[in-house]
Length: 134
Image (tube, rainbow, N blue to C red; front, side, top):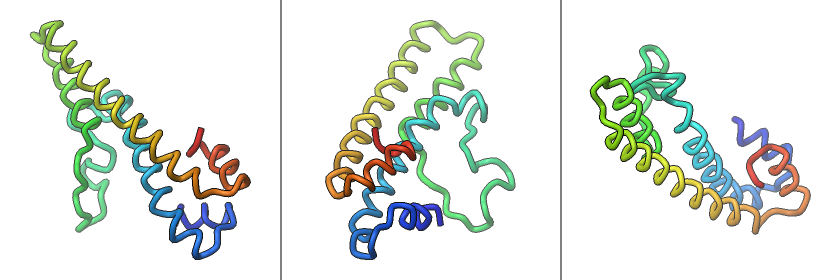
């Protein structure tokens, strides 16, 4: 439903939308991965992913795959909760998280470029204002 509202807002034709939607979805997914990973531990605690708590997922909803950023965030959070964790262990998990986030940043930049290539100037400006493009 959200993407349908976006389509209306940017004035995409049916043909334009068929090409644009998968690229837009990829940008949105990567943005979500990048932004969720850093704050997950603070808000959800160990092992907590948005939509994973009791009653937070619709009945019968397929379980989605854990992203590398989520996995690295969860591992770091779990280690931080361990009182006997050594600084070198924490440093290794922190490095793993940063590496996972950097990979997503690179993928996001490429996905944004792929999307931008097919947009009109007005559509591009709208997506910049929406925070989907830089």
